[in-house]
Image (cartoon, rainbow, N blue to C red):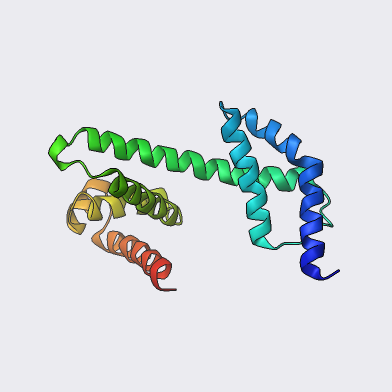
Amino acid sequence: MDSEQVFERDVERLYLAHHGWLKSWLRKRLSDAADAEDLAQDTFVRIIRSRRAVHDLRQPLAYLATIANSLLINRWRRQAVERAYLEALAARPEALEPSPEDRLLLIDMLVEIDELLHGLSAREREIFFLSQLDGVTYPQIASQLGLSVNQVQKSMSKAFALCYASRFE
């Protein structure tokens, strides 16, 4: 048996042994059984994509819970971004509302930006948002937050470096 077949067999064993437990664990954290089923499946998809050996796991339930919890956090973060976006849309005139396709693309982009910006501190994110979304100048940000313009510039440099790295590296 080649290594690919061994891996598939090991994942299948892990699935058969613990899928029910994982679904139950997720059901306690989600209000919808279908959502729990989807996240359980997504957990195993992530395992398959990672190609990490699973035959020698000492604590398979902890391993599954860690992956599933990460997916839950991503899901909740995406829902928060969607809610904020929909609230912002509701405040706009109807004539300016994007199409459903554009809305989905925008939400995906906002989620990607949100994930990227979690590499920054809360203050650095605030500075980035003030500058890039609200159009506040560096001196205005510095005055508003009680910082020096140099500190604002350093925070923006860090944010731009993250943006650049995610785009071009």
